[in-house]
Length: 118
Image 1 (cartoon, rainbow, N blue to C red):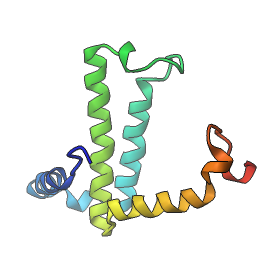
Image 2: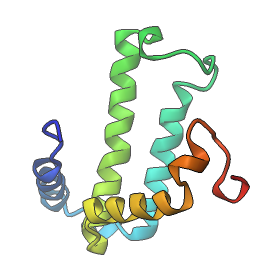
Image 3: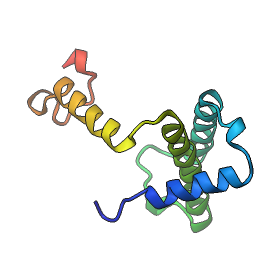
């Protein structure tokens, strides 16, 4: 999977949090709210851009800021999955299987319709 392993990041996040005694503030409610807040901060970078603009339209400073916002979203998500005992890899694979049933290739390829409109 192209070296996509979040085990080291997860361990570093939990260690960072525990060293500061912040676990007491990281309730599921607070973590889920933080995910939404950071996602909104990420969206701000794209708010007034044209829908066709891609990575090439971003300057280095803006790209770096976007990368930080993505990291913030992922960090809160990882902590939430850790605290709730959710295996994120398994949850994602299960969801992909569920979506494959809702969106069969022969009915939805090249379409953006919701499954109940296919």
